[in-house]
Image 1: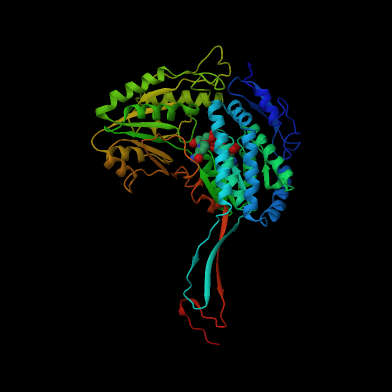
Image 2: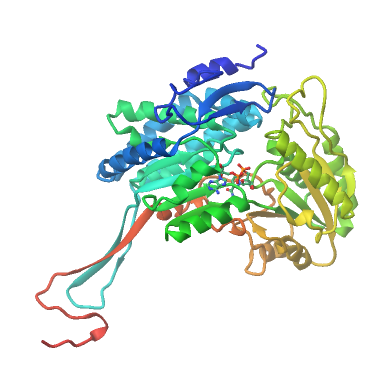
Amino acid sequence: NTDFGINKALEVLSIKPVNLGTSTGSNQFSNGKSIESISPIDGQLIAKVTSTTKADYEKVMESATQAFWHWRKVPAPQRGDMVRQFSNKLREKKEALGKLVSYEMGKSYQEGLGEVQEMIDICDFAVGLSRQLHGLTMHSERPGHRMYEQYHPLGVVGIISAFNFPVAVWAWNTALAWVCGDVCVWKPSEKTPLCGIACQNIIAEILAENQLPEGISNLIIGDAKVGEFMTKDSRIPLISATGSTKMGKTVAQEVAARLGKSLLELGGNNAIIVTPDADIKMTVIGAVFGAVGTAGQRCTSTRRLIIHESIYEKVVTAITKAYQQLRIGNPLDESNNVGPIIDTDAVKMYNKALKQVVKEGGNVLVEGGTLKGSGYESGCYVKPAIVAVEPHFNMVKQETFAPILYVMTYEGTVENAINIQNDVEQGLSSAIMTNNLREAERFLSVEGSDCGIANVNIGTSGAEIGGAFGGEKETGGGRESGSDAWKVYMRRQTNTINYTTELPLAQGIKFDL
Ligand code: NAD
């Protein structure tokens, strides 16, 4: 089958290929401008969708607000049950959704399936959480008083997501928000709107089966302008935004201007430190997958390798050798390792970055470039490149969202490597490859990595849903997914109850009438 089952997948997800118009997804309205979804795999137009207008948005907000008044009163374990049903539906549609993710975004089918699995995992987590939205009780300083805290639903949560994880990021947010009693309005990336529509179709089915208002889950489509409807809207107490640092800086200011809360998941510039005590085989696997997986378009992609000078030649030789074996091509064909990047603008940015780093003195070890010819007609296939650099180069300090790996040396002790690693604006993921306990512990200590994620003997790329996910500095400081990340989706209330006939004041203050 030459279409790799794409048409079948679209059918399962109720997506009408080419000229989708306004009929799919009940939050799709009629008068907005048209957005074309083009696959980076083959350059084909998959479908057209309409952008949400301001008037459409008002209808969505009306429906979301009404739904919230109902949903917040549904007991949390029952909300969890709805999420359980949603995850079952995801299990049924996993192959179809994984395929659409791959076709619309360009990552491998395996990674597309992995994204859907992540959605299922966070739903399972959320189901358990729905019975564990615990607050604490405290001892009151006043006699005959009881004090405790509880968490209430927050309201309408706005979710803005990036193209590179077109479905999982939504699920990380929405599954938790739903069990917390919130309703969500989601604006997926304008580069992957069909993934958004497919997800909305799936949840709409579950909500209808349960006679629940569809406004519990809402979809709006469009670019930054449509995102702005939400960031400026004081009816939305929390905006969770995933994307570039540039976007995060704008969103943070818009939301702060109305004293709303924002949860920001922004760019990374992730490094692996390779010490003389590293396992070289593991290092090569971790570094190569980290740098070329998803064609270097993960927020946790490995961008920098900081290698001890004593093993630099050995490590770089092994990695460049591994790069020679990479198969670049259609990511739906499972024999390929690297697919396309998102669009031709991204290709331009990649080429510009390579040119720039060479200008700064970078020494190209594995040549980059755009692939042409049969199978590469979309113009989005680029060669993963490796460049030897100095850590202070401008390009090395930036996130280029493409498969470019910068390699550099450090001398002396691990402290020097940690200093290089931390000396960038971003603070998402970091890793050390070492079998030396002292080095590993130093890396994890207060004097170690300044990132939100710090791994030992694992690459930087990918994370499990059980931990809180996010990063420091220009990565935005937000945490989502596991651990106690759920608390951001709720409002905390402290309650003090006096069960006596006296009214003692706090801090022993006397106030005699
Ligand atoms: P992007 O910033 O171009 O767009 C992200 C989303 O923000 C899109 O939906 C876009 O329409 C919206 N947007 C942009 N400007 C906006 C504004 N002013 N107001 C409201 N919405 C706005 O990012 P992208 O190219 O889609 O994704 C790549 C970036 O995302 C990379 O920097 C990557 O590191 C980052 N990312 C971070 C994480 C994380 O968890 N830290 C996860 C995935 C991607």
